[in-house]
Length: 532
Image 1 (cartoon, helix red, strand yellow):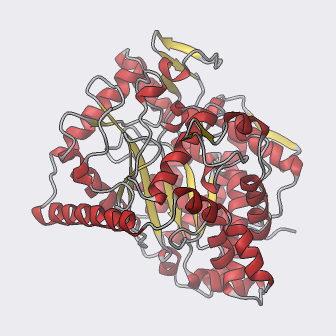
Image 2 (image 1 turned 30 degrees about the vertical axis):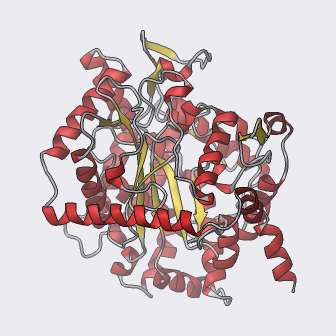
């Protein structure tokens, strides 16, 4: 019989101190659109006062020149992550003049694709590659989808925890191999149970009608300019967002690091007939990096990713092959429009509990039948998660009410929380799980329900709601200016990033065509090297 989480955890803690459960590194990546005071996407370039989007360690851009991305350094403390994210926000809003940071995951007013400026990263080969990759995303999926924002939570378990688990499971190989195997077990279980994140913390049940353009998306009408799903939780994670139909046929394996690399490599090296029709260079201008199913690995959108720290110019799959899985990237969190920095400690503590549950639970390979059920569950929860009659599919065969399954998982999460709370008299992890359990019992407590309630109470559409929250947050952040010392540190980082970009541009010696060919051929070169 499968071991219970309680049994596994009790045995593990005989070999560990509770503090060691918190010693792994964590980091946050948070996206936010710069918008004008009327709720339109800012058309101004990335402000130079923030330095180079190519080389700045903490402030960059994602898809669009207007889509800021804030990155916290990897540290062990969740409080340190949130403090640094807060400091980035306070620095940025001081220098935004009349612009705002959009508080919601779904974009503001989209006045056509041309009003979503694609990010630029200078004249270096790596900078040009980043820009052309984003052009390819435009040709393949459209720019509106790329303007969606979220929060990524990077997480690693400490080596001490992994070694203790390795001893418990009787694995005699290297720690690197065991870690990769274990992280993929976590990823598979997160695929199974990760729908809890949009259910509880999804905050995008509505969108501006301009996002849909002329598409018929099957939504209800909230107001003249707002579409919504009455029971929706995270349209960002639905089939109109990152779970888009264009990638539905991809069969990426999570059985092992080797099968993951092989299946992802197949996607980035196999040409696609539709993308061949788009072309690569047309009239002397690049439309995309190549015609493959995926231009590069990052084009594959997923709830959660295995990650390794890549060397300069190294492809992510080759970094995984070289170093194994070093951490995981949880990509399921919407921006919380009720928080000035987009998230809070209770949310991250819940996610941490869930990751430990995924670590401790048995995690067999995902069969094709179960994969279909997992994809179905994720889509249903994103669009209809608060429907009291919603049924989910477990292990590919059993159908059961979402609420029953969620409450069952809450019992296991409570067991994890009690151990994570050891030595903490205020029991913050138990509080996070307790509040999540209350939200499962009363869906009006979920973030998505609170968003719709505020819109109904205020009698305002999505744009009005999000704009009001954005204005509130920028006032709150500006009311707490950074110290002169902190501002000086950000200014120094910005200046250094500009010098670093210039150095990269000066050092380029290959043509862009040669640089791109060399980058794309890394897999073949690595295969030859490993065969020697």
